[in-house]
Image (cartoon, rainbow, N blue to C red):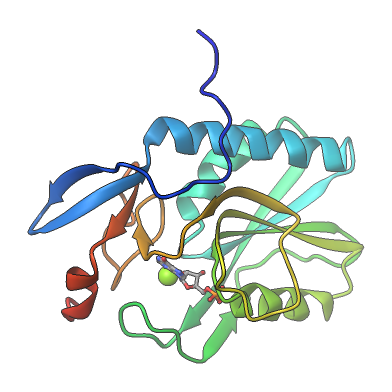
Length: 200
Ligand code: IMP
Ligand code: MG
């Protein structure tokens, strides 16, 4: 069986509709499409680093599912650590960011790859990269599952992006709304009605 056709630029399309608990979600990326995108990104990452040992730093909490899948697609020497970036947010609105790096590996003189779920305004990754650079790594690159079109407010872009998606609020495969839906195996668009009501 040939692999799923590679499709990075996801346009609006007929979405499969499902009912999840009490809300309606539309599938933007199926489990198979997500897996194919992560596998493809892993090939690009492996090619970029070759045999150079890599230190992967996952940004909690949204990267957990991507992190688990991505590292198992990488057949290169690597270490895995995490840091936590949380914005005091309610629902879909972004607030001030705090970075907790107590659980992180030492990164001095290492080639570091920061892994996050989504590049939206871009402020989170810019701040995380700035914080890591204070620790004198050999290099810092970034990899994200998703990049939302037309949303970026920073002069920066991740080196590795699995999918470019429309500007919609998405959940699943690690991404949450009010800490829910991270466990979905697919990526779903939440309806504006569900975002409007405060479900936290
Ligand atoms: P930033 O705007 O690039 O700083 O993104 C900050 C964080 O907002 C991301 O790491 C996600 O945790 C969250 N986020 C942004 N867009 C979405 C979305 O569509 N669904 C769920 N979380 C999102
Ligand atoms: Mg989040």
